[in-house]
Length: 106
Image (cartoon, rainbow, N blue to C red; front, side, top):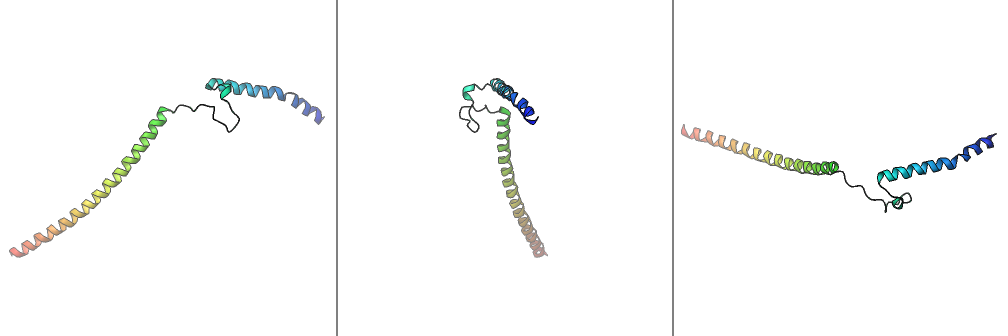
């Protein structure tokens, strides 16, 4: 009985394989790939590379610009912090000098 079931399953196998390969050929033709371009698994030398999506390229360019602007902002923030610290020190010196002048006037 088991051999009869296995035999009936195997008898349909060539049709299933043919159906699968027909589907693959149809999908390849829809994608614009000819049968000469199809290679064994792992070999892609004959398959043309898809053209880059313009939105993906623009997204990549924007990411690069964002990274550059972020680095620039960090540098400007650091310089501003340094200048603020220098201005604070200067203001303290000026305040101290003004106090000295007031003391000398008295």
